[in-house]
Length: 162
Image (cartoon, rainbow, N blue to C red; front, side, top):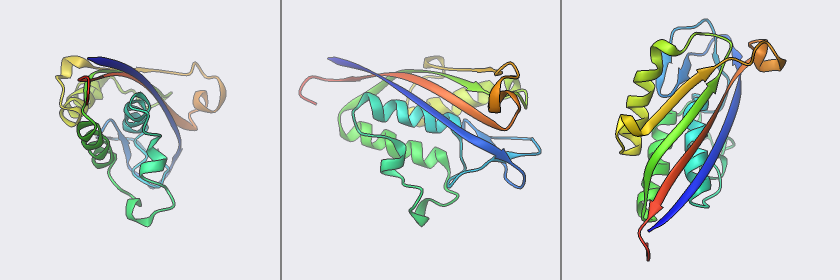
């Protein structure tokens, strides 16, 4: 069995007039993330970690922001597409560890729902999904609350010959 590790990162600016979607969960807040899709930074970071671990490029290569088919698309659906690719290549997700960097809103009440959603999409137990939230301590654009970022790391396995 081969084990591989991947890392992903994403960041989007906060804007008025869009819903805030993180980890597949709509979070009540006066601003949402700007982007071609629903701009879910957490799911984008997870997808990039999986694609990186399997040497399949990044999310933008598979779902380019220049393609109108993906305008306002659900990042849950994009991540499901990445998981389908992993399955076709013979990979299985072992675990994911992620962190969201946001000054506001407070995300602790939504973490369990995010873990549940991610686990279902990745076809792993919620206990194999870690999601944490932290602030940027007032530093830089994230610290001023101008955007939200996320980082994720994953382990995937592949049976030899897969």
